[in-house]
Image 1 (cartoon, rainbow, N blue to C red):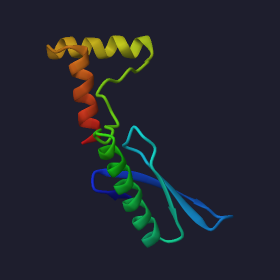
Image 2 (tube, rainbow, N blue to C red; image 1 turned 90 degrees about the horizontal axis):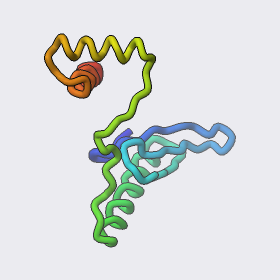
Image 3 (cartoon, rainbow, N blue to C red; image 1 turned 60 degrees about the horizontal axis):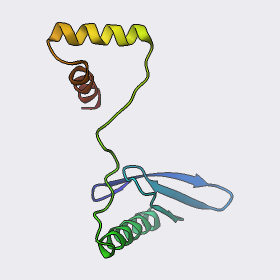
Image 4 (cartoon, rainbow, N blue to C red; image 1 turned 135 degrees about the horizontal axis):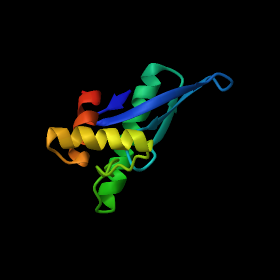
Amino acid sequence: MHHGPYQAVVESDDEAGLFHGETVNLRDGVTFQGRSVDELKQALAESIDDYVAFCRARGEEPGEPFSGHLVVRVDPKTHKAAASAAQRAGITLETWVARMLDAATA
């Protein structure tokens, strides 16, 4: 589910007869709920609009969710293999990993 560039995931609460949602691509948590798809869409839009207005009232830009820095722990054998692949490609390990991630998420 999305509203503009903002994405959210939704889970159901069978006991309460509600759906709960939360943004996934924001540093700040924005939540919403509804009993139907239409209610969820409306609640998401209202929550995001309120969030953006709140940020602007404080003189801030809405939070970007990701810095672009990623720390990943891998098995030493995987690290060695990736470093070798990067060296064979004539690029840094960082560039090689970024290209692999780009290719995997395209």
